[in-house]
Amino acid sequence: MSASPRLSPHATRETAPSIPRHLRYTWDHEWLIVDEGNATVGITAFAAQALGDVVHLRLPAVGAWVEAGESCGEIESRTAVSGLYAPASGWVLEVNTALTDDPGVVNAAPYTGGWLFRLRVENIAGALNADAYAAHCAHTRGDRR
Image (cartoon, rainbow, N blue to C red):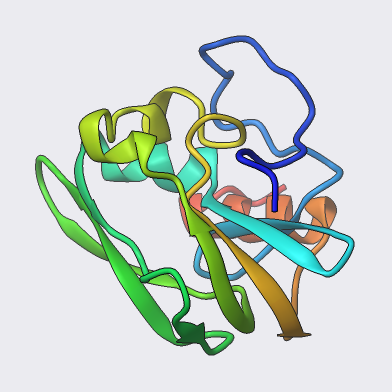
């Protein structure tokens, strides 16, 4: 298990709400990338922007089983608490402990340093590609493109 996920390098501050094409997405605005059966999971720039400044995270415990589509944690911003949903079923291998001291990285770099956890994937249910996720975001914002 590596100390950090294999994600493409980006600047410290990412443009929001960008939608990287190499990731898969959920209706609940989580992203994942699978590499050799392990998935790295985070929330999208769209979700981070909608939440506002993230101040606290409750992530699943290492060794815990998470079920696709089920709640596995919480993300607290200055104005709201939002559920974190597993985009796939599997065993949690690692959590991003750096976010304990600096949860704002989720806002600043949701696709790189703001990743949340890694899991050994057993089942991925209904992941969206970038185009389908972009359409979902447009619909959520009320855009009629």
